[in-house]
Structure formats: structure tokens, C-alpha cells
Amino acid sequence: FTGLFAGLATTLCCLVYDFIYRYNTGFTLSAIINVASIIFACNVILVVCGMLYQVFRKTIKGGGVVFIVLFTVLSLFLLWKAAGVQRSPIESVSVQFRGLLMGVTAITGASISFLVPYLYHSKKFAEHVI
Image (tube, rainbow, N blue to C red; front, side):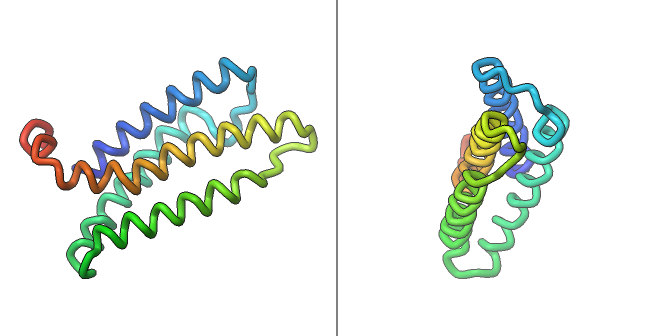
């Protein structure tokens, strides 16, 4: 349930970011990053990562720390790659798309690296939500 709850929270954060970003920048392209793709991708990714966290904890000594380090490094790598994305021949469109992509990537990466382990170990979460 940890991954599912983290997925829902991440989805809401990404949707709010998407709305605010598009409102402030006037960015309108939505073929790749849109409401449907955010809802689907965030939930699937976080549920899978929640299961992976459990596997890491059960199969690797210090698996929780390994998971956090691995997904933090992966998130930073994906942010670095996103900074070079060329979405359009129009530079301003590419810059706006990069801002949107990097924001969604940062929110998702932080949720995987920190929210999933935090919720997994939270007694209040286990008592009141699960």
C-alpha cells in the first residue's frame, strides 16, 4: 500500500506542478506530458518502486539505504538527461518543455527516493491509513 499511497500523493503534486507551470509559462503542448500520462505514469512507477523497496529490504543487507542511494542517483541522472532534451526546433518550446519535464522528474524521483521509505517505516501511516 505504501507505493500506491506514494503514487497518489506524487500524482497530485505533479498535477499541481503541471497546472502552475503551464499557467505561469503559457506552455500548451501536451502530447507527451499531460493529465492522463501523469496519472498513469506516476501511479505505475510508484507502485512498482514500492514493491522494489520491499524486495531490496528483504534480499539485500542494508537494502533500504541501497534503494535510497540507487534511486537518488538515478533521479539525478534523469534530471541531467532531461536538461538536454530537444523537444522542438523552436528553442523557447524546448526550454519550456524541459522545465515541465524536469519538475515532474524531480517530484517523482524525490517521492521514490524518500517518500516510499518514509511511509514504509511510518507507524502513524500504518495505523491510520493502512
